Figure 1 (cartoon, rainbow, N blue to C red):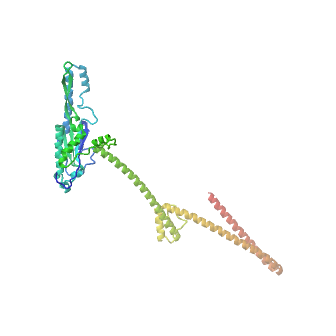
Figure 2: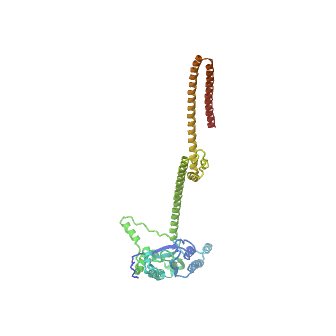
Figure 3: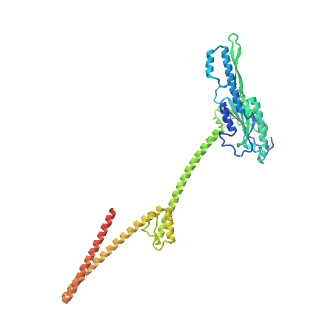
Length: 444
């Protein structure tokens, strides 16, 4: 141990992932950061990634070796059939061509190994705390040394590649295992019962290693191996699962390790959904805000125009439908008129509403005034006519008593009364024509 005061018990992490020869090209592309999912890569890593086991062209060598295995197996198989003089089988095998040197499985014939620990354990090293650089981080150095030793001890020459990644959030090691085996094909002698080796095949068989075949054994192995630097074995999930089943309890859910690219893809989908929902909500908020602003501008315009009309600086019945307000003559530069004009331009809808309201109100007011005026004039004419009739009768009686000269004056008064009656009649007719004309205009 390094004696750090940040000493905390963290588990060592070991995972296996199945891969095949067809995955090596993509693996190498990602290793060189030339393609694949690179969204989790640090823009400014503390140090470059480094090879720990194998050469730079390890993938090409592995593919070439697998091709050679296929051809050797094919040649050996044809030779065995020829020795047995199985001409028909030879023709069939030639038509089929070489077979892959492994049994088909859902995991593939090779394994990728991932070794790491929680990033907090690496970051608790004094070199990381004081930002002295990766090269001075003793925990990384110790972990790397033990990881390489464990890989070589467990897999020997079958670990064809290992590298340390330092350009991600947590330091970790990737390794590739190509589990080569030589399988002997035997046949039992019918006479002696003895088994004889009749052929050998070069194959890829991951189950040759106990740490791949048995997950619990692998976790025990790395837990013990890394204990010297303070790391511990991971949680014994399978043991807890078996104990829960034995007790009739609900076992804990199995942990499913997700590949980085799958995890990133899932997160990208979630992020895209959140962004879409956020955009939809933002759009709705913007629409509501715009509607509120429009209503506020409309209210301000109605208030300003109405106040300008009340102050007598804007004509109430001559406002333009295009939101233009007309000033009363002499008030073109009045502040109230200028404010009304500015708000009318900001909210033409409000200006139009005010214009319609005042035109309707003004017309109603004038109509009532006209009716009241005609009513008063008619009443006055009726009163005057009655008075004249009474005066005429009175003067006629007086004229009879006063003589012929006075009778002539009374006749003049009678003519005056007759003319007044005509004018009253003409006034009533004019009012009736005015009403008829308004009725026709409304019908049109």
